[in-house]
Amino acid sequence: MPTQPTRRAVLGAALAAAGTGVLAACSDGGGHGGAHAPGGAQDSGTYVSPGGKEVAAAEKARGSGPVRKVSLTATRTRLDLGGGTTVASWAYGDRLPGREVRLTAGETLDLTLANHLPQPTSMHWHGLALRNDMDGVPGLTQRAIAPGGDFRYRFAVPHPGTYWFHPHSGVQQDRGLYAPLIVEDPKEPLAYDKEWVVVLDDWIDGVAGSTPDAVLEELSGGMGGGGGGMDHGAHSMSGAEEDDPDGGGPSRMMMGARSELLGGDAGDVAHPYYLVNGRVPDDPETFRARAGDRIRLRIINAGGDTAFRLALGGHRLTVTHTDGFPVRHAEGDALLLGMGERYDVLVSAGDGVFPLVALAEGKKAAALAVLRTGSGAAPGASVRPKELDGKLVEAGRLAPDPSVALAGRAPDRTIRMRLTGGMADYDWAFDGQPYDAKERRPVEAGERVRVVFDNGTAMWHPLHLHGHTFGLGGNAAGARKDTAIVLPHRSLTVEFDADNPGLWMVHCHNVYHAEAGMMTVLGYRG
Image (cartoon, rainbow, N blue to C red; front, side):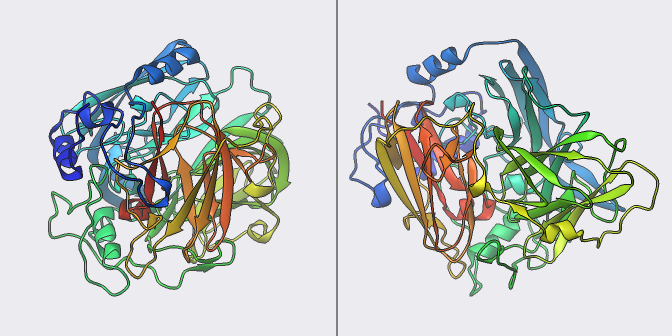
């Protein structure tokens, strides 16, 4: 079996490839020699290849329903954020968020992404249990899509829910490269009159010369200054803006952001704008309904560095789903969403004009949208409804709907991951080791896997598992999720069934922490 190339060689191959196949380095299933890596990762043995027969068999078992064909283009464009604010950025087409992709569970998605960007890119389908070679991680499951190239993503979509897609290439997600993916339930049990997809974001790109790459460069210098990007393999595409080599803008390092809900430090980056559906608070989106309408809100946190606390003035929220999976309905006044998390809620609309406020937790700013069912003046950008300080619906207290609860079962394997690093050196990692695609933490198909995340840092981290959902709390009573917050100096235990073969990332969904090294791989043994 061939030896895998070095990380730098893989990076060069990814940059040069046209993006129409799987990396040879990804398709050999491992087979390179080496000792056990720190923290339980291994770089020896044979692993299931993203393009292997096991992956094909799992996809066949999902079935093949009607095909939904979509074409998207990732391109440089100017985006109108409202209120006279326009920015030069990258997006899918010319809108923010990108055009929603909607299909029905059981269908097959056939989407071709054309790359008109000056850098390689990719597309990750956040939250979907899909075939491994379509997961969109350059250097692990596919070749990066080179400038001028395209890639055809085709896979079955068996599970309904609220999902989204974005690149898994450097810090590109913190530009405008994201959009909702809504998978409707053909046997939808909920009754509602209208649906409102709400995408939250923290915005920095194109403001006073700032780019996410320049922000990462500044953060990588640590608290003491200095600089220097970090080479973390083919996944990392960080670097200076190609058409603005002298750009970078003012300092965006945030100091003093504090939140009790997040256990202390709230974030690293001072974003100049916080958005709902691509609009600034001074010129918010208005959603129109009738008084008495029952409205389903599908809420997605697409931010790079910000948790949002969300409330709808004058209304209670009934939580029905988190991360696409149904829960026993729970009522409250507010939600807390880490980056990558999603919640579905139902509200019964009152009569009037109401602010939907997403507080940038700990950052003394907020995003705003408006629900209008009657006459009246729109709320101002500074509005802070009392519901923000009301009853918070907490993910750890949600119970799964019985239809999706994990079966009671003792774990076959326990994997412990210690979250390490800090702002001083900006050396975020698992077990002190920055990401290396060659190091995998092994699992076996059919196992119940328990993962214990032990956060040894002074920062909160929203951790995301690709290709699976897990039960919170390490038992069948926990809500099914794919992204969950781990508070500083606390542990989080989750369990999942190893039923989707391949090489799957686990990472912090703070895009800057991930690019600094807080990513790792779970690999199915071949």
